[in-house]
Image (cartoon, rainbow, N blue to C red; front, side, top):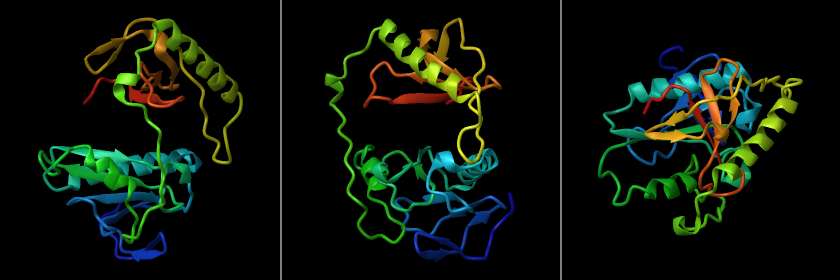
Length: 228
């Protein structure tokens, strides 16, 4: 990744000088920041959806997010968010990642940050209204291991069918490695291996179904390495 970049980049109808840039991505820090240090990382190529990125672009954007974390002001943690498509509240039809540095007590209530991200636009105008009908936590009953295994098997079948040929114009492969046979660690939890429906060919990443999904299709993608 190169250092500071002075040439302006067009994003959401605005011309902005990137804080950092590479051949494939830019980091923008002067677009209506929600909290100190809030930046937006975007691919140079103006594609709308995360799935439209090439593998090289996705890797470069991820590297730019990590570089922005290292360069951020002192922070206890970060919110990292992608609103992928208009129905998810994407304010600009150009794939982008929000990186919001957090410090303890920076907001009266921690969860206020999600509404702030939902309402964000690069110029500070009103964001398109999008609602997600999420049931209260007490209404989300834990599912049985067999229910989760059945969902994972269905997803695994779909992934296997997709792996027969590259997906989309960018040719992203979804070939899976072997699903685990033993217990899978997720933080302090030991998951039933039947919850895993996809393992990257390298074995470094897993996709798992949820015990209590927020909405149908809500799954988790996590590194195999147990890191915070």
